[in-house]
Image (cartoon, rainbow, N blue to C red; front, side, top):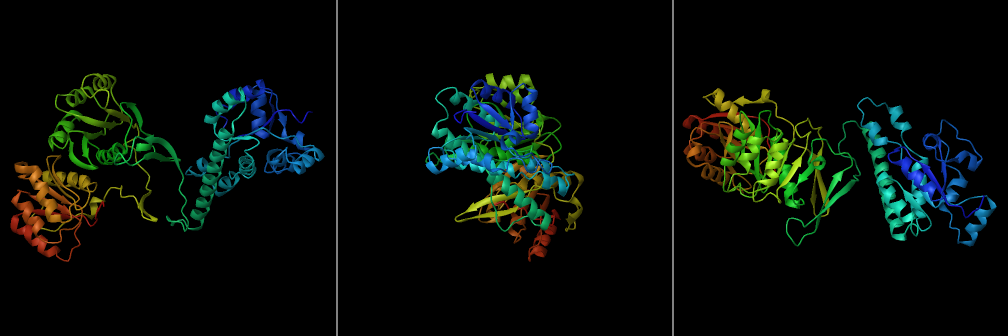
Length: 522
């Protein structure tokens, strides 16, 4: 067999697109070497295959654990034929160099994601030979190409049909290969750490792996460049899995606002609409149907709602679409679990902003989301904490005032509390009849937030409820709420001045609940 013969080594777990790709290689004159299940798959496709064991003269042993860990395999990957010492070894040992190595790994991450996985199954899905071949081929990318993902097949075949793989592409493939093995090793390490310390959420060494989804036009400001990266296995209910159906490309700020709107809409089981501006809600409402919820949410602060981001927790229907495109409204982006066909057509064709509005669909947006951690950069480091996305146990609510909230007030208190936890601290939320009336956010003083919320609500605050993300440190916040006509309050409690605040509520006839849980959002 001629040493100049083109050869490809193929050993993959994920066989997506493999048949046409291997057929393309065969048509280009490649001899294909393969192992185990991959060899069987290719032969079933009618593609000529040489078993690696026939090439090495050594059989697969130990249930396939040892099959490619052989000098004739790694010599064919790592050899540099134009280096005299390498050429001598290649000739002496009957090594035939590969021009292409196609390998992806045992599905370790998918295996351990199964709730019923056993330790034995996890161990058996740790690939050994695969990463060794991948790293060897990536190291020797000056002489061969390493293909690790099905989406690379088309581009590789295209170049092979021309002048061969360019050095630029081989470098790109090598980088992707090292990225894959790094992520794979980190997943294994994290798994073993979890087995040793089941309660540990924060390993001693943290290595994060995210895949770039898109380059963005710019960051928060035009002079900042930006990109959007997604987790390797993002939750089904997440912005990362949302599908853009229409509109301009998403910006950095769009994604931040969409995530904020998404998080609030998920809080409610009733039809809900959320209006976001600069990551804070300027409108939110629940209603008997979607259009009612939207109209109430938009009416919360129609001035701020211009150029806003919206979220719905139901498929967007025709009545809501007709309300959205009324003259005078301008919407940047919308996210919902889905869109009725007629509603989608309305949003794409009727308003002046029809070509610009981004329409996103996340079918799973209201499904339960597993607990996880949040990451936040500081200069020189990273802060990591539990996500604050779980529902508060209402069994821990405690009425601390002489007056008990009425049923209607209690419903509004629960509504206001769900919204308040997503508002930037110091957060004050005024609400009534399932509608957000006024928000005070991001102020250095809780009293200032109270005054802003009351100003936004105006006369509508008479008979409303107030929610505070952290305790009232003094009675002045309650006094301000009383001036606005507030009838009930909900807050975590826990201040050394709680008795003073409770006394102020009693003086004003305000009912108050302590939740026992704070929701600062810096």
